[in-house]
Structures are given as structure tokens and as C-alpha cells.
Length: 260
Ligand code: GLP
Image 1 (tube, rainbow, N blue to C red):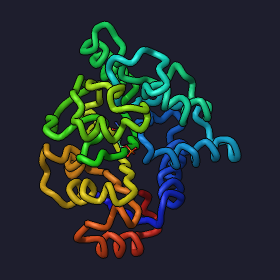
Image 2: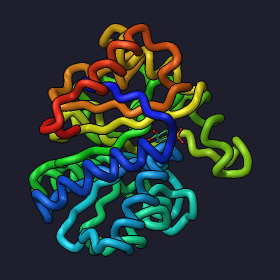
Image 3: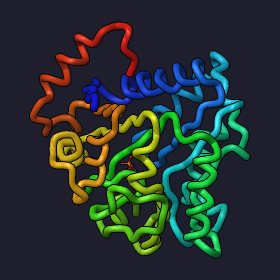
Image 4: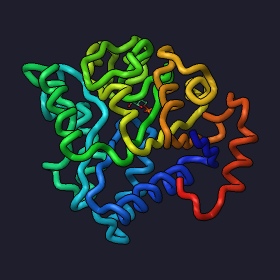
């Protein structure tokens, strides 16, 4: 796992967007894994800018989103399908037919989860997965206690996560209790994972996921098993890391030929 401590959102966005750009130049038909939440938004802004100003081309890209609420009707402004469209995919030239989201409004949710996994497999798997992290250490919507080998499935939200996300719905009572999410095993299968965390409210989750034991109580700690996981954090999110100086030293002395 590579931990990079940066000055803030601008530097994080530049580095993550740079990794996406390098991937697309190497593999124009790459498969991206997209996260919602506020953490990746600066990356989406930077990618939209590179598309607009420098013609960064997404025409052959496929995308898979991480998760979705169960029970919100298609078209609901807070459904992650709509959020990802608004925040990213409609700002670049991805073919909307190539954007796949777990379907939380399906009549048969388990069947929709299987179809989502099948589509991901048929696309050749995810090349680069962007991730945020919840204050309780969840990735996607894999709450503490999630199976480390899980695949896309229905989950029940912890109240803390409902409270964290109530700001998008106006009131806690409107936040659904159920969600569908890529599993931890699904996320682990991505070839490169970039997790972004900013702000002091993420410091405990970042410490636990990077330096804590590999344990379902911190689902993001499963990334310790990933052969190519990058964690991009600002100073506040890095403030509880024991080995912060070592991560800084490693990054400052990183060989110039080595990409993220
Ligand atoms: C939600 C999403 C996660 C996201 C998390 C953190 O629960 N399902 O994918 O990582 O929120 O969001 P934020 O980046 O806004 O802190």
C-alpha cells in the first residue's frame, strides 16, 4: 500500500486524475470504477477540465459505480446513478450505455446484483477503482462486519452512515436503510485502487485501514491485501498515522520512473 500525504484537494485531484489520464493513454478502452461521496469530486472536476481543455478521451471507456440506495426510484436526484451522471459522466464523453450501476430499484435486487457482476466480468474487470472511505471505515457501502470476500449484494446501513449522508437528503428520515454495494471481494479484484480521504473526521478510519489489523470491523483494511492500493490523504486525514514520516520520506524519494 502506498500512502501519499498531500497539501489538499487540489494536489490530490491532480495526482488521481494524472493516474486516470496515464491509464487512458495506455489503454483507451479502460474500465473505471467510480465512487460517489464528496471525496472524489475534485478528481471528477479535474478530469472534466482535462477533457474540455486537452481532449482527454473517454469515448471507449466503460465505468462501474460502487453502490446504490435500495428503494429510491430511477431518476431520484440522490440516487447514485443520478449523482455520478451529474458529477462526472455527463461532463465527459463516456457513452451512457457504458456506465453500469448496481440497480437498487430492481424488482429482483439479488438478480440485479448478479447481472452487475456479470457485466463487470464481461468488460474485463476494473482497471482503476476510485474510492472514498466512510467515517466507520466502510468502502462502497460495505459496513463493518462485511465479509472480506463479499460480492455485490444488499446491505443494511449503520445509523452513523445514515446520519453522515442525511445532509444530501435534507432529513435523516429520508435516508434509505438498505443499499446495494460492490462487495469487498469485488473491489479487491480491481487492478489498481486509489482511495481518497480528506479532513480530520477521516483520521481514525485512515489510521485503522492503513495501520490497524486486517479486520471486518474496518472494512477498508481489506486493501492491505491488495497488490496495488494507493491512499491519497491530506494532512488532517493523515494526522493519526504512526508512520506518517516514513510515508512522506518514501514519496519524496520515489524513483521518477515509478507511477502511482
Ligand atoms: C458514502 C458512499 C461511499 C463514500 C462515503 C464517504 O457512504 N457510499 O462510497 O466513500 O460515503 O463519503 P464522503 O467522501 O462524502 O466522505
